[in-house]
Image 1 (tube, rainbow, N blue to C red):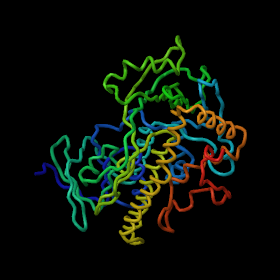
Image 2 (image 1 turned 60 degrees about the horizontal axis):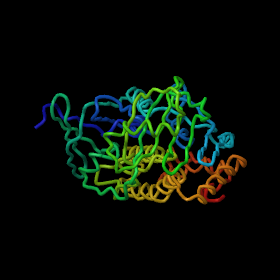
Image 3 (image 1 turned 30 degrees about the horizontal axis):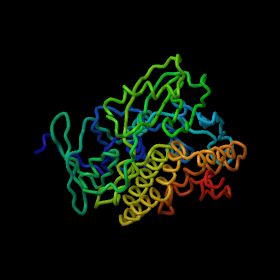
Image 4 (image 1 turned 90 degrees about the vertical axis):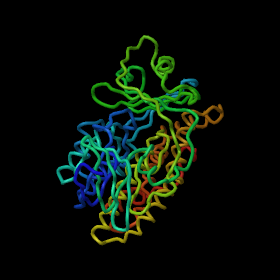
Length: 421
């Protein structure tokens, strides 16, 4: 029984994270009536991936929000690589990308990206409803109906298509009874947002710290001195007591006596998983609902955004009559291929480098980073790798069909620089 009138839209998106909101903006720009529902009462500001590479920035530019995001975030062109055990510290510059694509990355919280995309989408008629939790769905050959709990009671939302972008614990995927294939790692990550003068400690605005037990990622988030420090810990420990172990972990990144103030901290399990298929009838998955990877190297966020944007382009073409809905089955196959052949192996390799225990392999990793430091061509191979997650956009008329600069630059990115060295 519903207490509210049934809404009727073209596309219902479940989840107001960056993937959901960027997809909503792309659909709204295509003239598609779009509604986003979010179970939480506001945009999620928990510490998650916050680095956007050139491969995503080209899309943000096309969507018309990159310039605004650059005023709210940071443009970073230097990456630090640290192996404390060997007293090895070096940098890799993104300036090798000048003339090819963006020669910097964008640092901005996911809530910032989602908010800006939401504001622009709303101006085009998209609607966003918070505290609206998906509880059930049913579909027929022409529509899908979502059952939703709201502050005013239960309601139903009818749409021609539905996108599940509600995270790795996706209710949408569960309701579709889809297996989330893959594995969960034995360790977990703890993501913290902390005020600390990392620059005075020798860190760059982006950093990889490699150690079998104390590996982590450190990145500057804003102009007020807020940083992200993400470190690993044993997954067999109680996640509810992670704060008791935090000071000992922090001590391996921040010398004793250095002041810091934690704003927020959160432990989370890390996965290499992909849904057995991304489409069931008129419901399609995107973002972490579709595929989840460990965050080392930022490939999860990058892949999630591109899955959502390519899907939005295809749905827009279907509404215009330019494509048949069977293209969505090809979409499912292609995005699964991209995840298993590009994203997951790349992120797994990044995680291995951060946590490697074998001394000889660690020394070889150091040599690969030295090569990237010394040779712009090697650095370019590493920095162009995220463009591979775009994959096949599936139709010639796609707005995203020509975003990859590597063919024009005559660059082969079939191998990672760390594998070539």
